[in-house]
Image 1 (tube, rainbow, N blue to C red):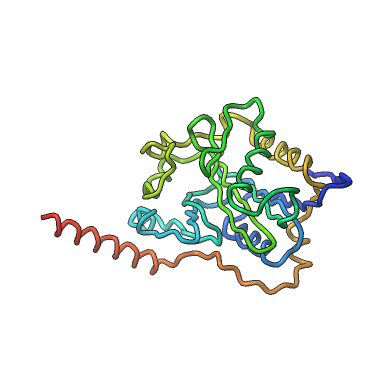
Image 2 (cartoon, rainbow, N blue to C red):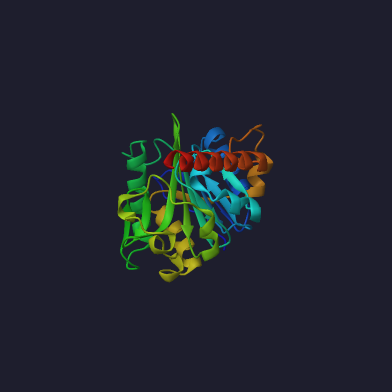
Length: 270
């Protein structure tokens, strides 16, 4: 779908790039480059990603968050991204929406995690109006008490990024790669993954969700569409992203350390 160029006088510009199925690593590299090197506001939408991939936050520890033996056996790629937040497995059933903004882009918005999260939830309230009990619960988007959207952020001196992985649907077998993290939201109440999450597909058509997100953006920004290849052609900035794939050796070392710790704990309990 072609997004018409719009100019709402008095509103800041936001560039919109709509993608379909590009690898999540490429998307994260693009986001990090735009955060670090651009002075414009951006919205990046990626409708699914090609292969199942695990994405961890910048401080995530594989031994604590992943069933590493299964990940290694099935050769699931693991990415450490440049933002905080939790761990998620993404694939063609995941829809991604990212906002990258200057700190003065939204009038009155303080550039701190909670205000940014609150602003984004109000934006999505427009999208989901009349489509279920949408709420922001701690750092998650939920319908009722079941999560369908996980968020991560990074804030610099003059800019911030807020990106969301929306669970359109999921493969039950993929949840086996993820461990229950040590720090969990209070509202989770020790529920396992399948009891804790729900699917966006049960509430809104996929294309409608994306289009209505753009419509919600137009209430606060003058939205203009951009093509990824056009951006890459005009970008002369040499940029080395910090987001990267973990190597098999790193995962094997994490698995070895995890097994050693388990063995030590068992020995001490005897």
